[in-house]
Amino acid sequence: MAAKRTIKSKVVEEESNSSRRDFIKKSSLLTAFALAPPSFVLASENKWDEKIAEYLETVPLSIEVNGTKHNLNVEPRTTLLDLLREQLFLTGTKKGCDHGQCGACTVHVDGVRILSCLSLASMQQNAQVTTIEGLSKGKKLHPMQEAFIKNDGFQCGYCTPGQIMSGIACIKEGHANSREEIREYMSGNICRCGAYHNIVDAITEVKEGGKAL
Figure 1 (cartoon, rainbow, N blue to C red):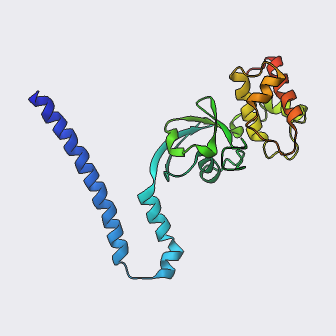
Figure 2: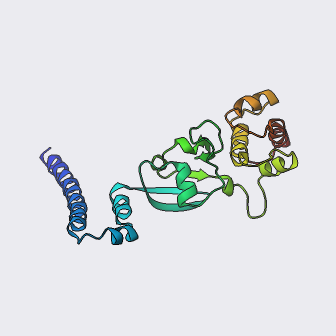
Figure 3: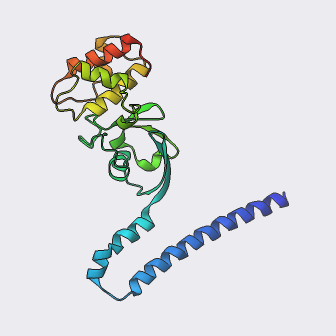
């Protein structure tokens, strides 16, 4: 029992020392910045405030996107959508309403469709994310992409990435057994151009064709 207490005490002490070192390191940075000769122009040009905020307010994130692993530092408030678009430059995933009401930002996380505008990036530690860019294999389009083109499942195309990602999930979830069921389980994806009939046609074709997803 005494040995266990000693080991536990050492672990707690090491964690405490690590936290203390981190605190001192960050405090020293702030002190150095505060004591530096004032030059608002220079500070603005070098974006010191942004650099310090980034250093103090980010968390490490390991994430796999479309088969590529990334080790990043992100702000805790950053959404998965903003991470994809602004840091990884995968702009196929669209920002529609930014309130989880239109479905334009739908992606797959560990095989499950989610609204990336409502999910914090920091919550996706070690997750596997698939976006619209990750569906095709080179110039070979995914069966759902081909079906959308064949059936004119889009007009302006803005909502199309989210529609395609949801359409694939709809079939995988077993919710594409009838046109009515498809409409129900695709109802979270809004098409402002009104291409719903053709979207259902595309999903039905892929489902009935039994193509591997």
